[in-house]
Image 1 (spheres, rainbow, N blue to C red):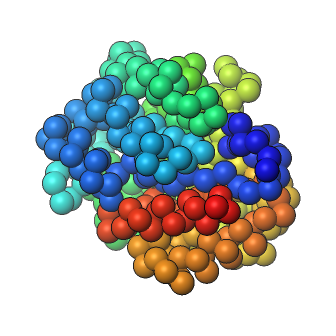
Image 2 (cartoon, rainbow, N blue to C red):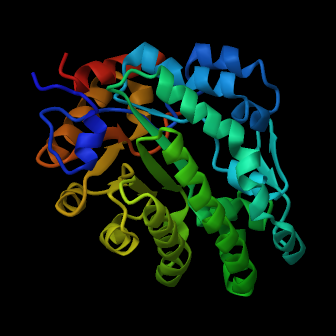
Length: 342
């Protein structure tokens, strides 16, 4: 049996392994009783993200329980606008609520306060690298500027992000000014995570798929390219995974235009598209998270399909989006066992 020493990093370097390494987006989360117990100690979600002790503990929980090949820093995409001084709140049952985007708010954003504000998150990265097994890859991340901005235009999420899309047409200058600030802060943040011990970095563009062709280039590809270039200008060895959800038809364009080292596939990406992309860069994904909820035959079929379709090239097994709170923990254990061939 081959060694799985830093298996995720080997795949990101282009290696095809006998069995793919495995981790899950949102693997530290509400589906785990031990997470819920820790979460109860911090009523405010952002305070939870900035508490190094609690964030370290919940990041380690799924590694202890399942032996995933990678741990992803427990934090949130909204720590970046929060660090810039953009008003961010989390409401129970509603999620992130931001002040609606305005010129006045953008004019007040301050790059100089970013790193001081995010120091507790970087401390979490450093603690995790010290406490994780050496073979476990540590992933840092940020939200893509478009996805972060989606919640800012209206102040909250809207169906198909119609508010953000209308805003991008009616006042592109305002959105550009905000996204430029997010790009700069994200570069600073990702470099600090890398320096703190993150082995690789992921950029989550959850709402890339709602954009039209022009918008995809302007708001998803363009800012992501700037972040990738900005990080690599300072840290040429940094490996960056892009995740433009619901963008199957544009994946080739995204990969080639952004310069990411690997790409996450959501569960709607067809097999033939995934295999074509895999000839260009390593891929990560792409089982439907609902199969993990269902368990049984549906789970086994989904795992086997992903392993078969993506087994001929560099592949990191993952879900096509984050694990959901309704997921039975025992189904996750079954998935890990099957992927590892145990």
